[in-house]
Image (cartoon, rainbow, N blue to C red; front, top):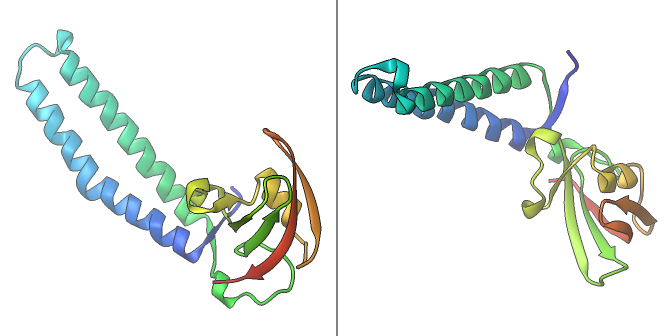
Length: 157
């Protein structure tokens, strides 16, 4: 299995999610199963079936997170010094099509969240930005059409 690349903050967030799944969600599901089982005949108990399905889902999430975290290659962006866009960089862009500025941090797929300005390294925009420098003009084919950006600033935090 290949390593999953993730920022230090992303790794911390996934560890916290795993802790919550193990200490809270797992216990909650066990209680739901016990309550449903107390209602009697399990062969026709929809509440019990739903709780068991939820248990399977939670346990799969736990296994997946444990596997991802054990294979993670953690990178601390604050230790990177580069004049080019690389993994972990926060890039300030001028949106040539819509006007205004937009900022993205290039992160691992497991931690991407566009609403927070964190885009996956495998996204079209990130792939187009990797290796670029301040002042470069970038055209990106996105699902919404062709987009144009100018790189204004590259920081690592």
